[in-house]
Length: 418
Image (tube, rainbow, N blue to C red; front, top):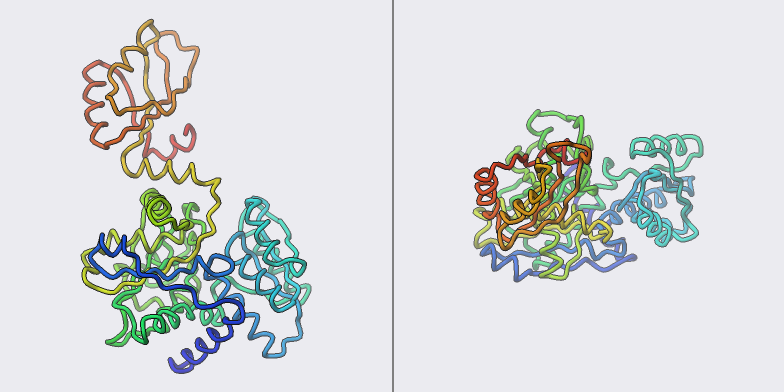
């Protein structure tokens, strides 16, 4: 496929999308621009009708099947998130029957939103505990019923639809490309679409791809020089936590270097989510904050430049907010967890409390072994206002002879006890 053909297809896809919504805003963000000494624009994909870019690819895939005169009038997908919602919206728009397979563990909020977007056009089936289970069920249903399977990222038509983001960016900048585009990577539909649209010429913008540190599928594959399936991943950034990037997207992205991929720690990402909410009033899901957080790692590259960050989605369930705050505090070094060995004698607790500083706060205090004769093991959570308070506390605890273990970064212990 030539570049001209791809650009023509993307143009057609973007024009067709105007049936559903206007181009999403490209907003100059004064807060981030001042911080990094650059012109930072946010491409607000969180402002599509389904609050993510996924609607672009799903709509384009269905539109092309209809224009090709496909016999099927039913479509099917497997998703527990943004793809399902974009799929449902497109089904209702076209008046087509749709079936969404979701894991049984899908939060009710996501199920309800998919039902709202799809209305009577879409049926939802909950099956399996994990995505792979429902994906297999969706494929089996498609094969037995003749329904068309709408993939989340690994298809040319999906990639073309997602690439409409890049075409809108150029138009919104007056016909010119920015100096740099920073974008999240999950399965690779969006990132490969943007990369193919801009190409690799001398006038092309620099591209930076961003993955969660706990799910570095593109980075790992680029390092290996071939597709690699991650044996395990951290699913916190659910919109970008993919065990293996798509085969078609990888063919486009394999020309990049591992250093072109920024890996963002999940805890630090939570700080950015809270910052955008508290300072800018922008609600972003974890994947939607990836490009914004990556600016911290590339700030030396962007000074004085025009940079576009793709905010990929804003489907955030506020029931997750306590977890986001918790992760942010731990990442900033403002909250830690300990196993404290406390003597079983009168006044021992008072002695310990007297060692705390004026800004130290006991957030959790739980006896783990209540029948101990001489010592009791306590799960202790402490919050403070300044990270340097903890080294000073350690010195006071050591001088007083208290035995303790910091388990904040011990994943096994933390998962079991916290």
